[in-house]
Length: 210
Image (cartoon, rainbow, N blue to C red; front, top):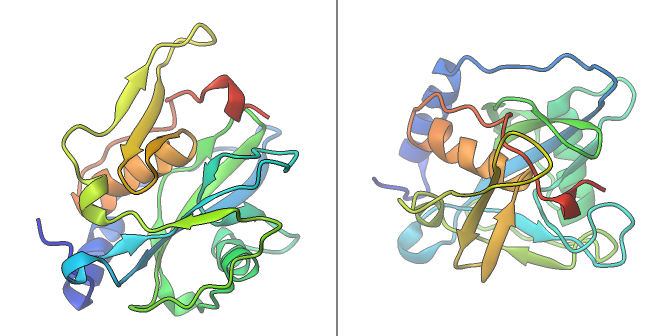
């Protein structure tokens, strides 16, 4: 499968997302948040990559965990508006609504959020200025990494009926766990492969509950 950054990749992802019948979640007391799955260029051989961060260890919520740019919706915001705003605040990358390609399924977290993932087409050369208060490190895993046949991995848990989902990425040197891993896995399945895989039932490890 060709993941070269350019108009063909953008059209393929846009088409797959348009054909996907996404599953929203009712609020049910969950706070609404959005994250951006941002595709950028600059990979080896011209391949597309995504933006992934690691949060500072000293944060009260999800400190030291891998994350996609995002956060809670402000009053009056749509998920798309929130994802673009958070991308600017966290990464210094300012994009407009024309770069939004579509949504994936909502994902409920153990920490009390309903995450709406927004797929965004970023620039070929992304000039980033990460906020050190929110971002400890920035990673750029390639789309080929996400498409590896051994992804994802599953772990049994004593906290619920469903397994914990993770993806092991060479770029990070370790495993990324749900909720971020669930979003990345569904992005791989839906946006890159045109599948209809659901992920909201996969659990998160206990360290991601707070």
